[in-house]
Image (cartoon, rainbow, N blue to C red; front, side, top):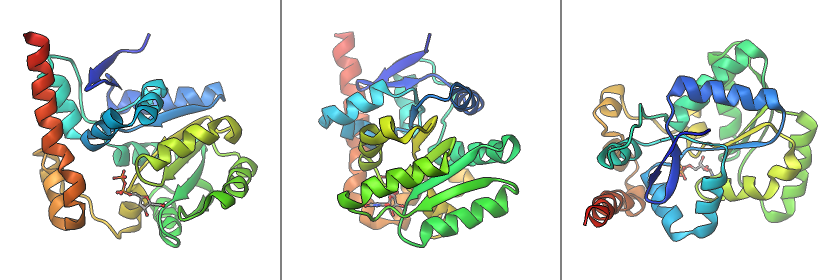
Length: 245
Ligand code: UDP
């Protein structure tokens, strides 16, 4: 039985980083397709406006709390949520496990050139890791069947897909039946960080739950998108008030 809690109608697994890695390893052992989703506050707000996205998340096999806001919301609602399981950190832990267990990884997404830089970074950081294929994420519908075939030929255990939310989740939902990959994960801007073109907030800011502020300062073009954060906080507070009344 899965232990999940609802954050604005999106079901999130109550899980630690260590347990999430273990779960992914179990999915690989099962050799059947599994989808892992990593929602933050922005994605949850999007899912509240997009029924298809919310169905994909709520039917996914593992949904980890990517953002500090999600952990805050669960706690505010009186639910247990042991820790933040950031998508970027989950990928790093899985790459480390992959190097040890010889899991095969395919990286799809990011700008042309960036995914290959991310691959080099992974190979340097996790010696022995098998990245069995890469493809950038700027393709059209007509390229998709070729990409799906190339992923199948490479037989990855884990498929990392960085096409941005919600495209990556919808792409995976459309193709997961054909891909024959045990674990597929939407990983957003992970390859950009691995390639060194985007920096993550320093650890003290992550610990102070200020990663959103760092992103706002370092990527001001995200400001409009990030308006979802205060709206998320207000909606969580309002929905709890409604429950209490
Ligand atoms: N991207 C892509 N194809 C597209 C649009 C975006 O491969 O058509 C990539 C983009 O280069 C970036 C990632 O998707 O590497 C999205 O990163 P972002 O930080 O915006 O992720 P999100 O916040 O949506 O999770």
